[in-house]
Length: 148
Ligand SMILES: [Zn+2]
Image (cartoon, rainbow, N blue to C red):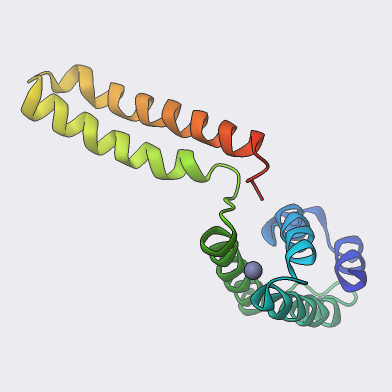
């Protein structure tokens, strides 16, 4: 995508990180591969092109991108990530750790308090187990090519 490359060249490293350009790059690759079969992905691809065109227009010279523009871009990204997840079974890297860790905290707390009556042991153990399960599930998803 031409506008995307133009933007990534014109932005500072810090701004590129704020926009998560490396994730965007992977998202765009996915959208391109699904667009011929999925109408929604085709529409998102157009929206992405417009969003980045706006950012390119706004980032001329030394001017920093406004917070509102970055937020709009992030909202679009989250929406697309949601569609890639529910519509195509893909997850972003770290997704399973982010979902399993809080569950681990919860289970550690519940097990330690109610079942084993040993909160000092289970409070740290729960999240550790959650993180391991998340890492394993994430590695499995990646090995199947299901990570964005
Ligand atoms: Zn799709």
